[in-house]
Length: 232
Image (cartoon, rainbow, N blue to C red; front, side):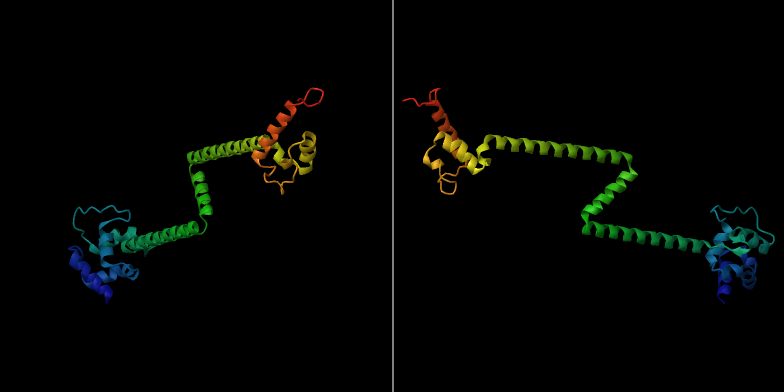
């Protein structure tokens, strides 16, 4: 019954097909209707080739059944109807919808990955960019080289500063017994410097104490003769 209504709809829209009865049209187009073709699909197939080009009608066909079979022959494969225009459009829409859904899922997964592990996501993005763009790879390599040079300069400056600090305060790193033997006993410094760091009011490793020690040593050596006796 549905095929018959489709045939009647074809007769309503086409003057040429109106020359056949609805039952005759149904008989000719039965394979196409059975394959899911609609009345609009049949009208499109009669007016267009599968590549989209339009048929040119120079005169009314003398034999309508043969004309129908001739126009629909390109839409068959091995004698069977191929996909109808509406079916092809539905498949394209389904494919586009599936691709859009997959793209949304990939974006959501990427967002989740970035939220869970930003460092790994950034590394993956850099690797993808480097693989897809030689210029981007070269730029990243230049940036890494600049960062490495900056790290080396910073480390060298820190090492120089640390060496300078040790050079200004050498006595602060000497063991207590070495300082006692080499400084206090040999140069007879005041009693405040003979006490241990824990008992002294001025810690021996303090920068001020080091300066006082050096000043006292200068005074002591300046007040001695070359033979070792003190001047009056």
